[in-house]
Length: 213
Image (tube, rainbow, N blue to C red; front, side):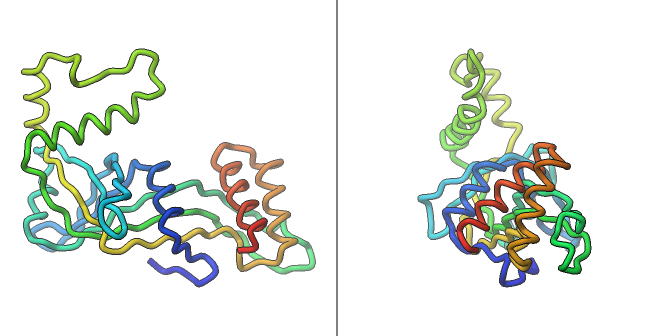
C-alpha cells in the first residue's frame, strides 16, 4: 500500500483496535491460475498470538478460494474504517487546495493455515458468535442448538488462521495540511456533512490534531 510518511500509522495497538472495530474485512489471494480472488468475511483477532497477532476466519467449503491456501503463499486482508469526502471549501481561503478523501485502513499480510481440529473449529465459531451476539437480549449460542445440526453446519466451512507477518496502517487525516485547514475540515464534516461516517472521520481528525500528529 502506498503510504506517504504523514499518514503512516505504525502502532500495533492502534491497528489492532481498527481491526477489532471493523472486523468485516476483505480476504485477497491468488487462485491456481494466478488470478486475484477476494471474499468479504468476518475476522477475529488474537492479539497475543505472534508478534503482530493472528487473524481467525472461515470460508464456506463451497468457496474455492481456500483451496489455494495449500500453496503456502502470503495473502492480504484489508480492514477499512471510516472515510469521508473533504471539500476544499472548508479550508482556510488563504491556502490553495483541491478536494480529497480522508480514510483509515489497515492491511495485514500472512500465510494462512487451515484448522483441521474440529474442537478448535467449533471454539473459533463460538467466539465469533459470542462477540456479535453481545447486543442481543437473548443471545443465540451454538450450545443451545441441536448438536447434529451444528455439526453438519461446521462441516460446511473451512476455518483457518493467519499469523500476521506484517501489518501496515494508513490514517489519511489531513496531517499534511496546516492546522487551520484541518480545523476547518473537522468543522465542515460535523456541521455540513453530518452523516455517521463523516462524524467518525471528524473525531479521528480532531484526535490526530490534538495529539500533534
